[in-house]
Image (cartoon, rainbow, N blue to C red; front, side):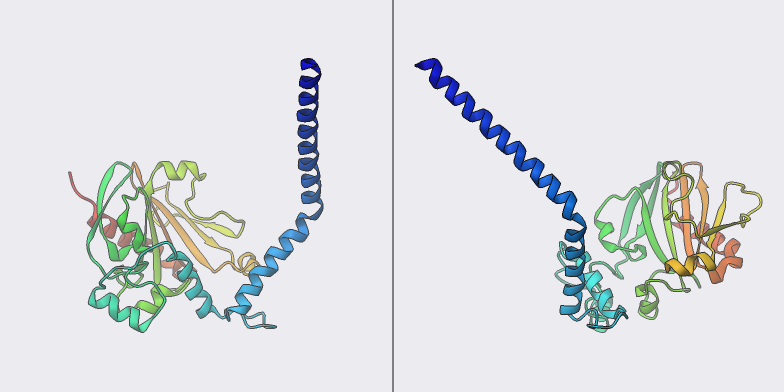
Length: 269
């Protein structure tokens, strides 16, 4: 009787296991059969949310960039806590440009941020950072924004240029360790087939790389015309500059200004 009972238990467990496996197989078959429809529903839901919230006009393909920009900053700030008390400059900017993250994503706070890049110590005022939340970290790669006119950070007079998705008046600076270049096949920026290589702006430094978008290739895929200038600041430190293609012929001057700025951040030992 005992053996019969045990056989019954084993039989039931085997049946349950087979039934569970059949459910898994059926689920996989259903997923692969209908995954395209699932993705289409999810995609249409995204569009529905944007239309419902007023970010995209119903029946109109033109995106309301101002509202989308606010949505973008709202998403970036979702898990962050704004400062309890804003500086006078941040408060004024927040009143002029509500929802743009002043005091959190953008700031006029000049407090120094220490970063070790490629084994070298740099101290950078927070206001230079693209995302001032990085000021609360110990970054090993820093991403900065400056005016192309004087390589100064955001000011009350240049807010709109710095908030723009792309502005010919802005230079983006990425400072990273030399290993970043080897890990990205010699290029820190986004790879696509719309770049055209130019001669290095500094003939004495063969490692310099100047690449600009080819307008005919970039326009169909909606890539904004820009140049990427990459050079060795030191043996262990790489600088990449991203700026509007209209400034391509000014690349040697832009590199010189960037070198001077980065040098001013470095702590000499």
